[in-house]
Amino acid sequence: MTQASLFRRITDFANRADPYPLYEELRKTPVLCEEEGGPYVISSYWDIEALLHDPRISSDAANLAAAGDDALSGPEATGLPPSFIRLDPPEHDRLRRIANSSFGPPHRPRRIENMRGELGEIVTGLIDGFGDARQIDLVDQFAYPFPVTVICRLLGVPREDEPRFRAWVDPIVAGLDPDTRTSAESERTAQEARLQLGMYLNGLVEQRAKEPRDDMLSDLVNSHGPDGAMTTMEVLTTAVLLLIAGHETTVNLITNGMLTLLRHPEVLERLRNDPGLSVRIVEELLRYEPPVQIVPQRTCIADIELRGVTIPKGSHIWLMLAAGNRDPERFKDPERFDPDREDIQHLGFGSGIHSCFGAPLARVEAQIALSELARRLEDPRLVEDPPPYRQNAVLRGPRHLNIAFEGLR
Image 1: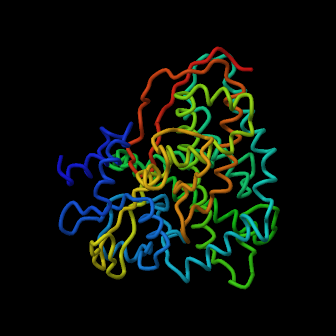
Image 2 (image 1 turned 135 degrees about the vertical axis):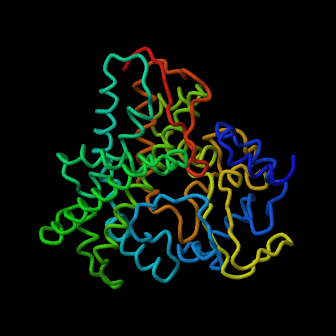
């Protein structure tokens, strides 16, 4: 197997269900360029972590466009200007600080923690909705609607508007998968949904400017701290970033998590008896089966020397987070799922200035979701293994996860 064919096989849908043997092979060449002008693929934990902190690596959409990188669209591909995750300092830092002031410490230190009760109610309602069924699709009936509802509540979308909101989100999220982008009809549907969502959010922004409430959208609209205020367009792009990026990754985290637990029934049983174990389980899942497998869109703005290889200015870099998370140079026995692992400093949320903005929320959502599924599903088991996967190699997760069970506790 040549190095070029190895990289193509990693992104080939035929290997989506289990790319990890290919990641293991990839780590034998930690800095890999398959062809002249192609991306440099980085697979070592320590190299990935260093590059995520390296100011010579740009996330700016303008640099990506100049380098011609259109390999995979990110979650901000919504027709709006780039969100702050596609910007470099200092503009990135300014917008992220403003957004953080309404999302967590120091200004809103308990915003996410105070949502635990509401998150639990949403999860309970979704599980109760299984009714007398003895088989469910966890994605369609639970993991997919859960984060959309949560983000609606966080932003301050009125509850009576949540069904409309979800109707717009569905085609937008579906359009993130490469297989759906080839359909002219699906692209028209997604474009119309983006337009409707943008108009709706703009209306909410105008309303919150006049009548602020205790929600994140009000905070974004009315923030006037040392970094100034966001423009209306910056508020919209930040809201859509939280919606799209937070939704798809959380769906995959919950679905990958339940799939892993069903493959490790002894851990599932422990979680059923000890919900507090969910904290360690989620951290190990972020290492073992991360919802974001690859960071593909980075550009070198200077020459970089790495392991004796010169990566020229203007080159594309792909950071293989999932390969780094199972690097034996970093983790002992990395192919084993072990929530008792003492050292779980994973790359599941990235690192550096672009570490996942929504990580605090995603952690709590996954902890509550998995602990309640473990507690309430009686004798759950997989209907098929492996399940069918989404096309996307970056945001990797099952498209469906059919689970049979004897009933609800």
